[in-house]
Amino acid sequence: MSPVRKGVGCIALAAVVAGLGLTSAAGASSSDRAITRVLPLAGASTSSTVSALPLGSVLIYSNLGAGNNYNSGIGWTVSESGSPPGFFRVATSFVPSSGAQVTQIDLALGHVSGTNNATIRLAQDNGAGLPGAILGTFSVFLQPTFGTCCTLTTVHTNLIPVGAGHKYWVIATAGPNGTNNTWDAWNFNTTGVTSTTASDGGSGFVVQVGDPSGAFDVIGCAKLCKVQ
Image (cartoon, rainbow, N blue to C red; front, side, top):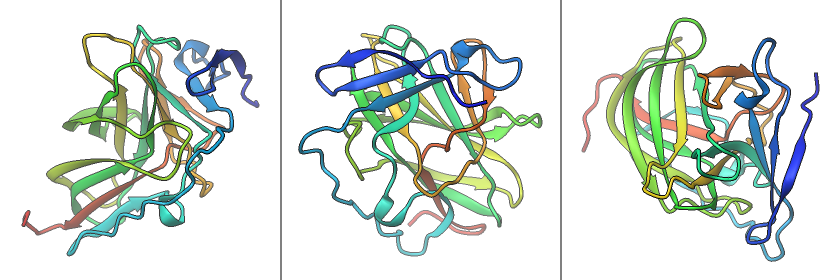
């Protein structure tokens, strides 16, 4: 079933429209899904910021386009409970083709309004196709403005081992901060990749279907390595 998008108005600062009440996976509450859209911005940057792969690193996973390209006009809502959309967090899965140790995660997380900070987590799968045990938690600040491309939000993870053929999750959560008003968006990829996405509108993660996954990559080193 095609998503039913319900516009809830525009924010003049960024000309942003939030789509709420979307249809979701069978049996899931519509409150567990939200998409943020941005109308075209005059003078919006379209330049690419290309991050070279660190020396000695391997690309464990990526759905980014050339030049770190992603869809700057639409993304999964990532927001705190006091923001206009209410609480939403989003997780996207990936499966390494070989054993490695994660050292870096880059994701297309843009800032819409409120305090500009978020929390990124790397998690195992719980065995039932949803995020499980947390392997690492990382704070990020000053994300690029949603609606521009192609600067990525980067976290450095030290060394976190991942196994070949196993599913893992990158989770984006807004905040935390004292204002409880952060509204971010995890921009869709432009490569057509539809890795499993799960969103949580306050009642637990629910797998979503029918829309692209958030744009990101996972970088690391061979199974036996050390941080230089």
